[in-house]
Image 1 (cartoon, rainbow, N blue to C red):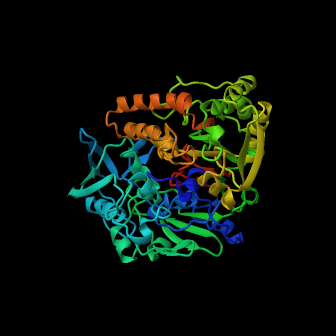
Image 2 (tube, rainbow, N blue to C red):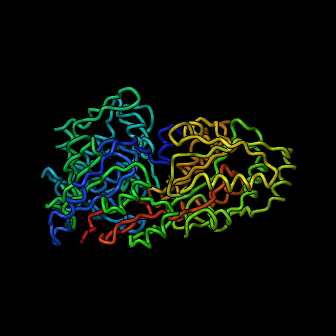
Image 3 (cartoon, rainbow, N blue to C red):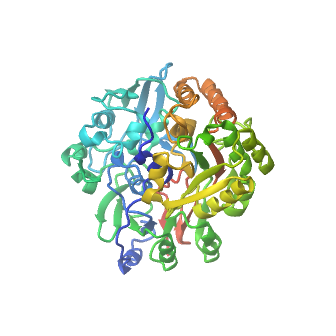
Length: 559
């Protein structure tokens, strides 16, 4: 594996913050909800989005704001249960692996059509996989095919091995996918938005693979900009880029229960305060990640604030490359003992936040209580620093501005609390603050940040989705390439993910969690925070997702 690229780190913590779009909230958005769609149709909902979608082809996407839109139009072979993290049937009704975990047979749902009227069948499944596997040119860039490269690896003509081997349409209702190795993340990977099924006819007609690099960005195809075509409960109706407004319409030939709403609009409002004000003014019907400081006020004003179960992790990252002292386990243990995580969680994070014992929540396989706990003990921290000959340790501590994340709702307050703890243990802290997309992520990715705040909201109920993402590359920013244990940890993570027996795989992850805390300690897990989503009192039927992957087909709006 290679060193974590900047694109991956942007996904790791911010999911690729979208560029601000000039916005003018017009009376049109509010009036559309009063056009008399009627109770039967559910009317129109307008949701305040933090950023503009880059495109509408989920395969080339990696940011949460794009997925928030495409998730309403596309579906995968497998899905995630509403309000939970477990897999459930979606476009496939069942799946069976071979004993070695290399061959997967999917039984497909009957009577499903894409939005262009073409059938969803095994040929369509294989056409989608072949399209992804056979990317060329710019399509092979990690900045474009991020989830494919991170989940499946290489492409048909590339030197990097791929997890994907082949897809065969056994009959119209049966698709067989062959893998090159067993992985505990399959078939869960197929619930990721990037691997949702798209109409092969529309992909071909509108030249979906016609993507070209231009300057620091890309020029996307007609398909990605104007003709995204899935099987979901909503279909694409238009994008007013000037006003930052995406409109979806109910797909009347949907195979399942039809959406309650007749229209769904995503109105781009980059500033969180402006989103709150728009909700209060009745210009939008909801938005995501309200500031915890506003939670009670929103409730008091009659808004429906729903708090998701925490499915994330905040950690104190430790880079060993430029500060040799941090390569000493005793020094990293001293950092862990210096931090008062209990007080941080209770005083700084929102209600429902929890102190993290492992590097992922306890609902994920392989979590274990049997790990070393570094209790807050400044005296023990000083003692370990002295044993390591680092009584006068100085560290550069980087923290981000111009960002909030589900796991990091107030970076400045979190940094302030951690800095105070470290200084109380005799550590000199040099603070370094930079905008999230204005140098912070670059400093982390290039290993210039000695200590830093980072985290992750899980894509899947999978230990590899958390600790494999963080620590599977031995030359990542969390340790030096020359580390005596970096390659060993990477190999252990690979072995656990490749174990086909579920019980043995879970036991391997339990042992890895013990070693991550006791022997390696490449970072210090801090907390799990519950992010919120808020809607008006007229909105009914919204099911909050721990993965922040809400679907709006169950939503209706009255008033």
